Amino acid sequence: MGKIEDLEVINGEGYQLTTLDKAVALARANSVWPLPFATSCCGIEFMATMGSTYDLSRFGMERMSFTPRQSDLLIVAGTISKKLAPVLKKVYEQMAEPKWVLSVGACASSGGIFDTYSVLQGIDRIIPVDVYVPGCPPRPEQIIDGVMNIHRLVKHEPMRRRYSEEYRHLLGNYEIEVTNADNDK
Amino acid sequence: MTNNSLLDLLQEHLGTKLIASEVLFDTLVIEISPSEAYDVIDFIKNDTTLSFNFLTLIGAVHYPEEKGRELCVVYHMHSWKNAIRLRIKSYLSQENPSIKSLTTLFDGANWQERETFDFFGIQFEGHPNMTRILNMDEMDYHPMLKQYHLEDETREDKDDRFFGR
Image (tube, rainbow over all chains, first blue to last red; front, side, top):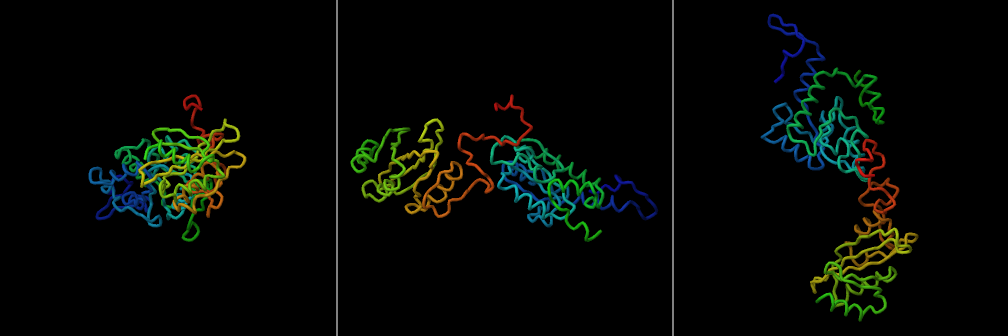
């Protein structure tokens, strides 16, 4: 599970030292709580990914969160219509920091084949996306690869990214306020 | 009851209200003027012989090249008693696309008329809640009218040469 050897550590007699940032990032990466926002066929592939054959739980992800407040990773799998867009944005805003977004499939990433008046042409028009998974729909292996990329990001992310200017600027582009930033500085 | 005997009955009862008729895909299609559509549907619903008790569908078609009758409202009726279907068409002009609502005859007309309004902009007079039902509320046009593109106008990543625009 947690490969402490991957980190820069100092080993001594009966103790091991590393930086808090890295230890926390490792813990976070190995217990990401996903929120599946599945609207169509990509959602079915995601169900297969969660099932016993592909078994996403072996990466510490068996706890699906169906409330945005207790989740870290928003998995958007499927077509998002323009009418649904404000709902998705609200869900993202309600998630507590730190949070990541995985866009599964062509529709969530770009609108896919639905180049039409009613469909949002990619969720990155309303919320920032960390990893895109291509495919229509992607196979479970591809979704797992996307999740592995999310884990890589989580492992190498500073503990307090939400206080950085860049992060504020990014969310500002989407007119989203950084929550809680001043309370526990 | 067959299409022919149904047409005979309708001609007998409706007389000049029946503007035109034809058989398309084994179903009788009749044209009624929009001002009389409500009364005709009321009649064929409550007439004991015809008994068209079920409103299957309300839809519309846009014919931009037919001046003065650009919008066509289509009612699909079903008579359970006679096991026969009937399509009723009413043509409206683009300038004044309004027709009397059927909500007082069929409760099921409510959402279908809202959908027809949403996509074609046809006003159903007397409808209790003539608002959009499927598209987002902020949309400022009726997307099934043919002067509007079906594609999302804001998408930049598509090359016109490959996507037939």
